[in-house]
Image (cartoon, rainbow, N blue to C red; front, top):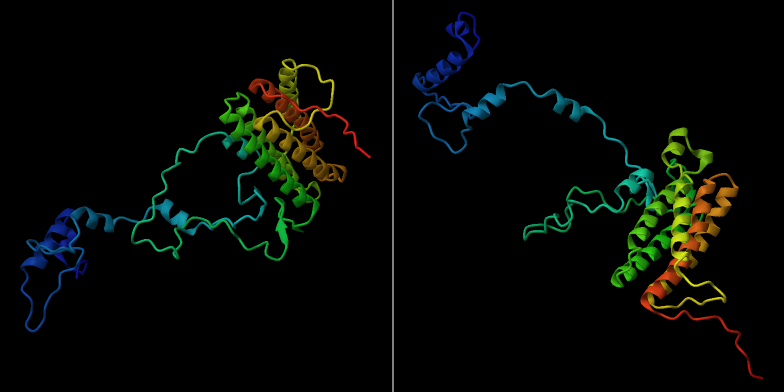
Length: 316
């Protein structure tokens, strides 16, 4: 046995010990009625085996484990965060969403296609989209508070989700028609994510770190006002009520404006109760004006006629 008292190997350097040990395994004849099986990690000289590992692997076995791997294995994983709709832990949140919004994913199209041996019942290791935590009619805010799904917070979040979807549809129609305001609409969608993050963080249950992370400033409101002035200067003065019309791009922008008004009505009670930032309601108010002006601008650019309201004469 290596390391036995009086063993001559103890006086040899490590490399000579390894060579001497291999030579001893190869040259020592087995005793009667016994067979010596060479270790799989150290095959005898001249012996070829498909299970034998190369010398580099044997050296790696003698190394102590890396400290960073041990620390990573012992470090506890953070618990999964519950999400408030598409805000909260299950999706991007606040400033993180704004930073990533508009940037194309470098990994797009790199998902490996399922092979012939893949089984649909087995998990690929990716997180599942469903959590089952809301099956009983309750969901979590970003602060971790559990509320009923018909709470004012989730009602406002759902309407903001509808608004972002409507604006996304408007951007697609605008892109097909070659409008240059499409990037502005994408930026608006990012700001709606920030607005939703603020709504999903009720001040009554929020810590200071929550409030700092989901704060909503007045800068986006001022940016909308500059956009409104830019397009208003290119439009004829408004002399009559106009109906949602003026082509597909214009009509769907009017639809987005109507959804925006509803989102504002859902957020205002939260602002009055001190649960959301007043700048969120101000942004939605200004956003509806922007969408109205943009709808008129789209109709003008496409040469479409806007329908004017006229009192309908009813016959007796």
